Structure formats: C-alpha cells, structure tokens
Image (cartoon, rainbow, N blue to C red; front, top):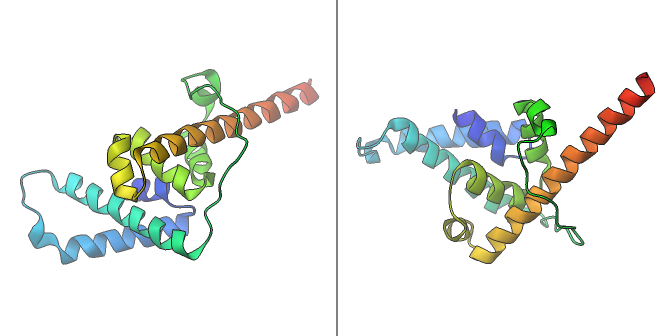
Length: 160
C-alpha cells in the first residue's frame, strides 16, 4: 500500500523506492509518537504522503518545474471506455509522466481526498494554484489517454 502511494507521487520507480525507504525510517524513528488511537496504516500513510511531498520540495529547488502553457480546456476524466480498458499500471505510468506539481496536486485531490485549501497549505501554494494545477493535470491525462486511443484505433485500421 505504501509503495503504491510513493509510485503515485514519484517520477520513477527508483524515486518511489527511495521515498518508501525514507518513510519507513521516519516511522521507525518516531514510532513512540504514534498515539495508537488510529490505525497504524493511516499513520504510515500520512508519513508516506508527507515524505513524498518533502521529496517534491527538494526536487523543486534543484530543477525548474515544467510549466504547461496554451492548454485547451478538456472534459474532465470520466469512466469512459478508454479508461475502463486501461489497466491500473498504465494509468499509474501516465500519472508519473505529469509534471511534479501537477502530479502531486492530482494525487492529493483525486486519490488522497484533500481539498484545495489543504493542498495549498501542504505544498506552500495558494488554493487557486492547487485548483489550476489539478485542472491542468486532468487535461494532460486526458490528452495522454486520447493519444493512446488514437494509436490503438490507427493500429486496428492497419490490421483490417
């Protein structure tokens, strides 16, 4: 479960494994701070998400974050046939291809269930930035999915 969280935030499997290892180290070092009131899994999940965000902030200072301009508004992701046919692993690979800021906001909002105000606070940005990055992440994911569908349709046409 924790590796799945790391994979959603990281840009590669190697980076996800590093974040996972750091998360477990932090948990073991701070095990005495776990109150025992909630589940251990929830506590570990919180540590893992925080470690992933910490890694993102470190990376952000080391390289320029990719900014996507001139993006056209797209329909929000829906449970259409393209997504239904897509395996979880394929979707995860597409999420990993998103620019780091978009990927983190997408995960925090769509997967972890945070609201945009909470995301802004966690990431040190505004609520509006969170909303914008989430919208752009959805647009990019939709474009990636549409490209795959177009390739699949093209391959089917050549096969016939």
